[in-house]
Image (cartoon, rainbow, N blue to C red; front, side):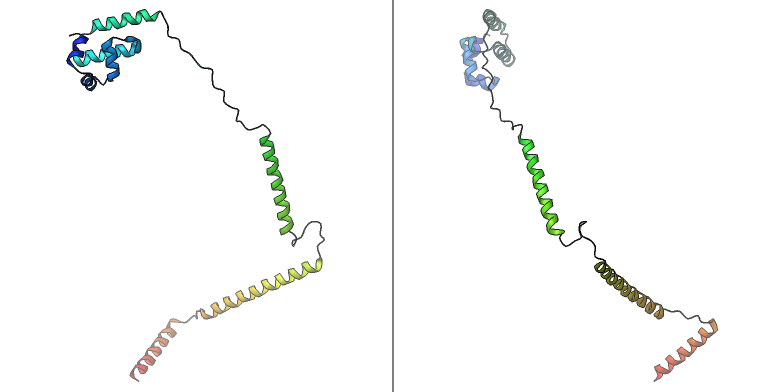
Length: 190
């Protein structure tokens, strides 16, 4: 069976469904117009026809190879366009130093304003320390610590007094227990 028999017995749609070769390429092969196909594609399609229809299409393959051998002397020219030059969108060289300068100025301004607003009440190295104000603040702090200490001592004394354990001899303890039990019995009877 030749390739012509395959095309006569089957419609391009049936061949497409069996081989998955597009109908356009099937028509090109049927017309033997190898100019519209590259060598690799044409030989690949012929191999697919041989596999799917289990036919020897070596004669058709030889025709295609002969055509491409003739065309091999005339090389296809590949034209390359000049590379597209992109606009230089890089940042200017002076951008980074300007940015760093602005950042340094902003930092300096922030720290000077912050320190002048918040440190006006505190001591600076330029101001002399007044001994009287320092003594008064130390005395008030010592008084506060003394009052706290006395409160803590009072609390510990109270705790010790409430939890003081009396040492009692064993015989005395038995006598006290019997007295307590006699009192409890009498209270119960009343």
